[in-house]
Image 1: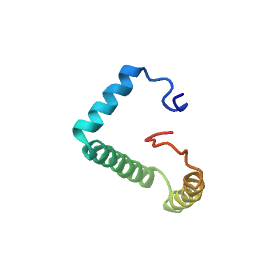
Image 2: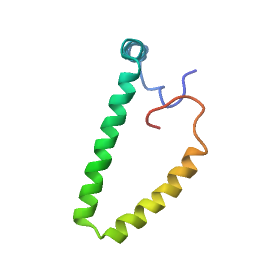
Image 3: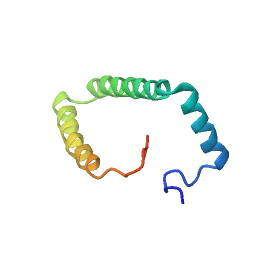
Image 4: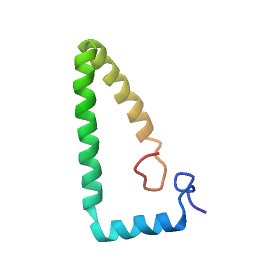
Length: 82
């Protein structure tokens, strides 16, 4: 039985993902990581333009705690978004 995170994908979708991973290897993950880094940079710039630096810093400190808690309870299967 597939995990709930991938249950909504068809067998064809999963097959294509596997093929892409085999053909492109780590490049897929490097591309995703670069994309996420760009998002972080954009959000950081926008936050600093529209919000007080103390508020941004406080919010990031809260997110660090929350994300750390999430990472200690990761799902046993590999995931990108969950």
